[in-house]
Structures are given as C-alpha cells and as structure tokens.
Image (cartoon, rainbow, N blue to C red; front, top):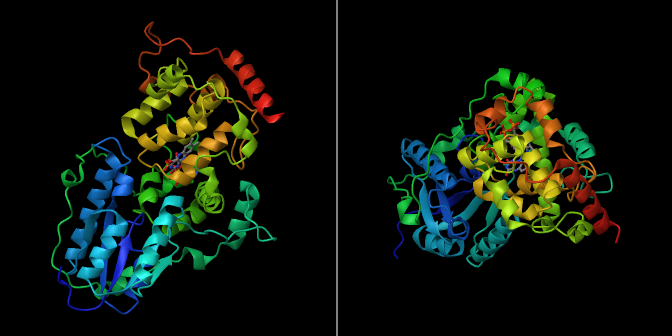
Length: 438
Ligand code: FAD
C-alpha cells in the first residue's frame, strides 16, 4: 500500500485511557515535536474471548471513540481506529504513516505486557521507539515499596506509605489542551462499525462520570448500604480511562479519607498484579490451592442466576445479571458465599464476574475474589465466614435492596436455602483446615 501520510508522525496508541485531557501518554506524544496521529485497535485477541455479541463494554468503548473522534475532527484531526491483531495492525500502520515514534500508557496486565513487548520488538526492528507513561494509577510498580525495596503484600502498611509519598507532583494534571495544535491534520476517518466486528449495540444506560461533591462527603457514612445510591459508580470510567485518576484523587484528598482509601485499594491490586502475575489462575498463597472444592455445577448455576434462597446473595447476582453492576458490599457477600458456603473454586466466580461486570478489571476482580476466598495476599482469615443474615441485618436492615431485586421474597415460590448456614460454615472450616494442615 502506498503511504497515505505526507510527513513523519508520532503515533499515540489509546488503550484503557479513553480521554483527551489529562492523558499522560498523549501529552508526551504531543510534546515530542512531530504531528501526532491518535490510534486505537479493537484487539481481536480480546474481542474473540467475549461470548455475548451485545457485550455492553464494546458498545461503551465504541461510543467513547465516537466522542473522541468528534472532538478531534473539530480540531482538524481524527482518530485512526483499526480492528484486528495488534501484531498485524502495526506493520500495516508503518506502511501508511512515516512513523518516528509510538507513545502509549502503561497497562499492568500480563496479556498487555506480553503484547507491548511484542509491539516494542516489532517497532524496534524498524528503529522506532515505543515510549510508555504511567497514567491509570497514582503510584505504580515499584514506586511504593517497603524499606528493603520489596513490594508490600498487606494493604494497611502499603496505604500508609502511599499516603506519605503523595504530593502535588503525583496529582498534577497533564495539560493536553495546550498542545492540541500538534495533532496531525487528518481527513475525517470513520470508526469500524460494531457489526463489522461481529457485535451488536448493547443496551446503553451507562453511569455518568460527574460526581456531586456531597456524595463523596457522605461516602464514609453511606458506602456500605447497597439500598442507598451512595457510591460513585465510577468504576466503569476508571476502567476505561474516561475519568482521570489524578483529578479524582485530588477531589478525594480534599473531601473524604475513606474514598481516597478505596482508590488506594485500586492502586494496591494493580501493584500486586504487576509484581505477582501468577495470581492470575493461582492462589496468592499457594497452599490454598490444596483446597478440595466441591464445584457442584447445579449449585453454581443457582448462584449465577440468583436462586440460592439467600436473599442478599440472590439480590446481588440479579443486580449483576440485569445491570452489569454490583454494590461492593454485596460483591464481598456473594463471593464469600460461593467460595465458603458452597465451596466452589473462586476462579469460577471470578470468571463469571469477568463476563458480567461492566467495570470488569483483572487486578481488582482477582484481588476481590482472592480476598473473599481467603486465598489472597491480604485476605481475611479463612475462619471468618460472612453470615449472610447478619450482613443483611447490618447493611440492608429495611430490606430495601433485597426487595428491589427479589420481589418474590415473601412468596412460596422463592427458593429454599440451598444449604443451611451453620452446616455450611462447619463444612467450610473443615475443608480449609484439612487443606492447610497438610
Ligand atoms: P466506589 O465505592 O464509589 O469507589 C470508587 C472507586 O474506587 C471505584 O470505582 C474503584 O475504582 C475503586 N475501588 C473501590 N473499592 C475498591 C476495591 N475494593 N478494590 C479495588 N478498587 C476499589 N472493581 C472493579 O473496578 N472491577 C472489578 O472487576 C471488581 N471486581 C470485584 C470483585 C469482588 C469479588 C470484589 C469484592 C470487589 C471487586 N471490585 C472490582 C471492587 C469494588 O467492588 C468496585 O470497584 C466498586 O464496587 C465499584 O463501584 P463504585 O465505582 O461505585 O465504587
């Protein structure tokens, strides 16, 4: 194919950072001196693993790219969006643009790292550097470590060091708007349609990303009650970068310690994934992989559809199936119930959440599941088993949340408990003890 672009350019590769303002990698690309061509790849390695053709996350990304493109078109540029395998797309891009450098932001997942190494090698064969920047977290990799340089594996001391190291430098926004004249002048380009990639439009109704300050002020008091609409629902936006973590953490620092703490959990799990990629597929504490899970498929199915006869568990699973979201307190309860009451492998639950959550994100999902199963780096001790009835009494005392999702609660048609609580608790204690005492 003949070259379509007349002068040397820098490429900026969007991934999980789908915004223009305060985007670190885009800022560095624009400051590099060459005209910048923004690109995005609908990665077939990822899309092929999704089995729902109406996967709403693909619709979300597609919508956001449309907005980004509109914005870029108003500045005389455009985004070049491709569909395929990155290792095949890049050689094609190099034929169409005289590329002098590629910029992108860090991604800490094992697949992403492997992909980026592949692309870096491919580019380096043409003497093109791949420059990468930290963008999606406040502190990454080895930035917050113990005195001996080793990574933290317990949250509280990590969070103390994180807070001690925080200063304005880490929260400063990247003023991309000042450099937008560096965007390469481009003709308007179309984004491949969802249909052309084998998808259909999924239901929209995505949570917004404007958060009232009052919600954050009330956060510590209200966050644990799933019947209140009292958390930010920013997880989807943080996942895809439609909200800047620096701007959010700045707000959090001024308004709510507790809210900031949750953002630190997010950094913590990304850091854990980076240092211990084996957590994908394995228990952080290897001895926990000796647990003999019951893995009863019928019980798993009842859990998935929200038919266990435990109202708080069923409410959570139905919320997840219907909306793609589940409140954090209920994520903990449903995950604990699956692993401890039913003794089903945490990896089954992790995979189900990965399929259903709009905000699915490997590091936090794996961290959350291993925490609930007791197998994780900073998990609750295994003998602390959530009692779904006490959790309900404490966090949904008026049954507001439960009645919303389990309207047949008082009817005879509602399922009987799949297992008796005290029996399940004892069975769990024995099973874990047997595995760990070997
Ligand atoms: P808010 O309470 O408003 O918190 C603000 C932000 O802080 C969240 O958007 C999220 O980015 C971060 N955050 C809050 N709590 C946690 C936490 N415990 N760990 C890490 N980050 C946190 N979060 C995901 O983003 N993706 C997942 O796939 C995911 N899977 C989970 C699975 C299990 C079993 C558990 C127990 C938790 C999981 N979480 C996950 C963490 C948490 O439940 C969600 O981030 C939160 O419920 C999202 O709602 P929100 O945006 O209203 O949160």
